[in-house]
Figure (cartoon, protein in one colour):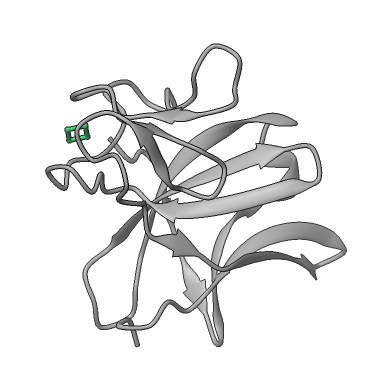
Amino acid sequence: MPNRKTGSCAGSIDICGLDEMPERGARGFELAMPDADPLPIIVWRDGEQLRAFVNKCPHLGLPLETFPDKFLSQDARTLICSAHGARFNAEGDCTSGPCQGDALTKLDIRVVVRDTKPRLVLERPSGHS
Ligand code: FES
């Protein structure tokens, strides 16, 4: 279940400070979207690699995690849906499980510097104003 609410500003939506992400790990966030429902997302960091997906499994549309921020396999190479065990690679493609061949919805995130600190922001996804 997403566990952190974040705010937005013009042009992009603030997620968190880069230093709030583990060097290797994933976290869940719920982004406040202007004029739309909140958007649950997963941010997955592997060193310099940062990826984000909508936290909605293509199998039944459930959030992937049962416990906060528990998204990754033990070797931290795949996202796992806790409901029925679907596994997703770094591109968000389901590589095994009941939705094999489907994919998570990928999001466009980047690092910006605000008040001298690097922050992760989401570029507005299509379908959200
Ligand atoms: S809802 Fe994710 S595998 Fe079934």
